Length: 189
Image: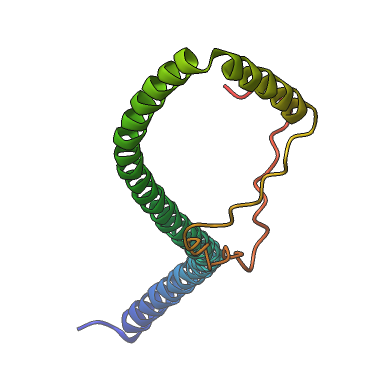
């Protein structure tokens, strides 16, 4: 059986071990606390970066949305201008077609009239040569007067309904400076 001194030494040794282990545990807890504080600081930095990054993404998406709205309004204006151009081209095509038909009919009539007039002139020149010379002199005087003092020609006015012009206005983007950054004089490679 152990003696009282041996039991006291054993208890004293156990208490020394407990004290040493407690100090080691306290040191480890302090290190864990320091590491936890370092991790928290790093997580706070990451959170700040994410918040500012999402803010930048938000501004970028807003800029893209505004640019899309501006492009959409310009495309609408372009579509309206294209409709106006198509209307004008249709009107011009219709007018040209009508003029062609009228000219074709008039050409037939004018050709027959020219042939009849030439034949009549030939007959009259043979029958009345003196009067023909008088008419030629009168025509020369009238030509000189027309060259000197031409008669004013009246404005014929429009012969069709004008096409409708564009109605839309371009969209002006909001919220940011929409001027692209100026390039410096440095050479970019």
